[in-house]
Image (cartoon, rainbow, N blue to C red; front, side):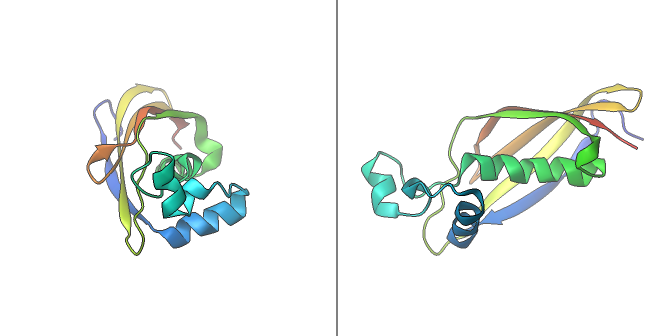
Length: 132
């Protein structure tokens, strides 16, 4: 039974530089802040960072996996508040969970939380799904 307060199972996705390269190639976003540590540091970042849209896509996949597919998602949005920092030769976590905040018939509102290394990386992350 899905009701207000229902917690969705936590999921941890690991992000590494190989994933950033694959995403850059697939998306066409070859910005060096996502691949070149020296450049990223030169513009004030602590290290290479994951693409914001990659982070968003991974959270979106979490929602679609839970809800039964992309066709069930009516709304999905978030704000980027902190970067996912990806040092060379490391895998970093993107830890995702959610809580049901409203149930109206088959429409379910979910508040989502995404963190990396214990730091919240998305703000105001929410989804509305039709659960079948």
